[in-house]
Structure formats: C-alpha cells, structure tokens
Amino acid sequence: MELWDKMDRSKKPDLEMVSEYVRNPVWDELSSYIMETYDVIPSFEYSGCSWPGWNAKFKKAGRSLCTIYPFEGYIWVLVVIGKREKERFEEEMPLMSEYLQTLYLETPEGMGQKWLQIELEDVGEIDDVKRCIAIRRGISKKNN
Image (cartoon, rainbow, N blue to C red):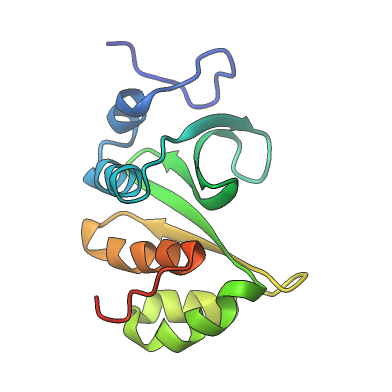
C-alpha cells in the first residue's frame, strides 16, 4: 500500500491509512474506543490551521467530542473544555495525570473555553483523554 501523505489535499484518508501513517497503537486504541463508546464515525477534514493537514473529527449529536491530528509516531488530541464542562473537569482533575493537570492550568482561557492540545504517544496515557471526552459528552467518569 502507498504511504499516505497527510498534506495531500487530494487524498482523503480512511482509518487504515491513518493507522499506517501513525504506526503507534494510540491511534487505533483511541479511535476504536470513541467509535464504539459513542457510536460515531470520524469525519476526515483537511485543515490549514496551526496543525495543517488531515485530521479526524469525532462529533456526537452535532457537538464535537474531540479532533485527532495524526503525526508519525504519535497523535495530538484537541478537546475543548467549555463553560458547561469546566466545573466537572476541575472536580475530576485530581484523578488525572500531572501532565494533563499542568496542561489544563497552563492553557489560556478564551471566551470561557480551554482548548486542550493533548500529545499522545503512549497507550498508557489514553485514560486522561477518555475522561476528557466523557466530561465533554456530559458523562461522569469519577469511578474510573
């Protein structure tokens, strides 16, 4: 199979192409988890933003759960913590890794939102992202 080029606007990827590009189980595990848990399929979109190239947007009921930006060997996950999620997130924050706590505290707030840009390269770090997505969706994960 031809190696996918995430900067090529003419070649929209699929799950397998992204998996082969990332070459790290964090993509497979997180995308599978989101699809199975929330019954969603990612929408692949090309972006010219600060992380140019193709990304995978996961939405449920018209609301963004997260956006995953693939890189060779790792992924970035964008989760927005808005006014509705802020209180619950801050209640559950002590259950999260030091990395995510620091990221949250250091992320500037704009218009009542924090855009958490979470770098993932180890499957052991996925639980924090799952918790963020659950909070975003309005599901408490305090017991996880």
